[in-house]
Image 1 (spheres, rainbow, N blue to C red):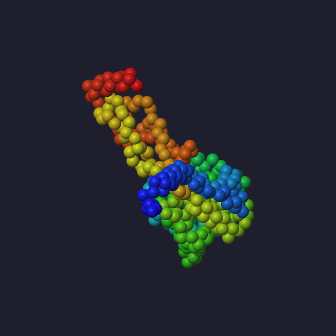
Image 2 (cartoon, helix red, strand yellow):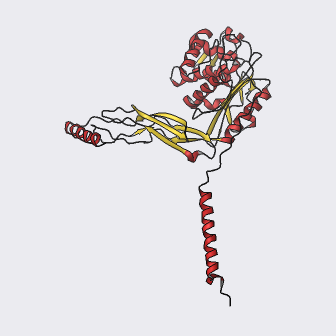
Image 3 (tube, rainbow, N blue to C red):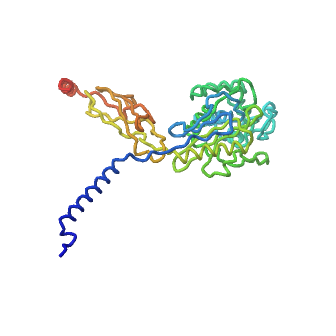
Length: 396
């Protein structure tokens, strides 16, 4: 009589071997590396120059001739508006302040807000006219009001361009009307746009407005993407024969904000389409994560001779990292700290470096700062810590 399967020694042996082989197969599969994330090359655009930058991390995801000095046309007005917003923030002017329109401002050619000579126009209306209607007359009016004229205002523009790290920019006027010495680059315009968004967020909503009416004349924002893509909320268009059609745009999706700049396209439609290609590429293949928040404790090294024994270290502003999608779990932090830290330490004092690593690549870096002050301890505490530090150093 044949034995049941579970009682057969041969079959028990075969079952054991099959189980071992299955276990070995699972073990080998578990040791296989994770599938590599495939990211295509960035799109090639029909434009002279372009860049795609993450607004939070500053990471550049795509670029072409991004540092080439080109005529920026009305992209210039981003700096004009930025300086108005800066003066508002500092309390030097108010939205309701009235500006007298000079004949020179009224006669300025190109795109207009249609202000009238010798009338009083509020700073608020002029700011809207600069951003939405791209008014050259409004730009000259604020330049005269803030600095006494276009040339001194352009000097201010260049000083702030230097402060912001815009190394390939020189302004001659507040409008962007052609001049051989008036130029900027895609990277510089992206840098300026980051500051507009971050420095004065209370004014940023203006850039998303589709229409503005002044003097009974209703004009649309020339950024076509404001109608086509609900995630796009700024910033500025530009066009002259020398510059071609330019567009600086920003969009936010699921907490990730991108800034794109295209310069030197052939038409209004082309600059919109090429911008859409850049934004779609960035959102599809990358994500941006807030790795550490401002004021978050990252390390607590020993501090010698202080009123307390531990020092809280962190970053002075939020730290973001932009990585290919599906690779955020691979991020690691690497800290570089002094061998020894002694009191006193002031709040905000730099005491090391934080690097965020994706494999062997540094994707974000920031100084580590003291999150709070640490005063010296009393005489007995300092003496005791000196002994402990000596013993610790001796044994190490």
